[in-house]
Length: 208
Image (cartoon, helix red, strand yellow):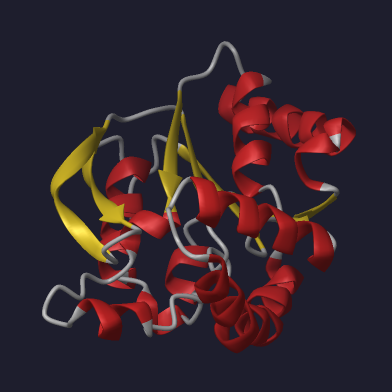
């Protein structure tokens, strides 16, 4: 059993649900507490041995796309108060970058990702489990905006991926993981009441 010195918060929800916004708003409500952020997207398996066309066809919304072993080790390290070297993922080339980002130890570690609550090895590490519940049409619009602007992907590729993998995997893996959540947040980052409740719970746990 890992000796705990940090509180781990897992924030799950569909693609475009507002998980990162909830994470940032929760951290902003904890001004006296050090907070580290971990994005689960950084832990996609590297697929540099494949061609770009083959990498584009990977189902990134399936649990098999995640390097769960590395994510588990890193969360255990952060929970025990040790720093980690978080991988960096290039969403244009669909490969892991050679450089990493150092994440220092913190009082609270917030992890967000669509499948954060889907794997029992990772799920059992969280002290507080959150699911951000947002309507499907809002999630699709946000995903389109993000992938077009931030990741430089063509519209047809984004829509094809949504219909063939994002939507089916949401129904198969993401939505069912909601039953493991301690707190369900409707409307994402706009739900200030839910965010303050989560922050109050974290403050209480940290004070112990």
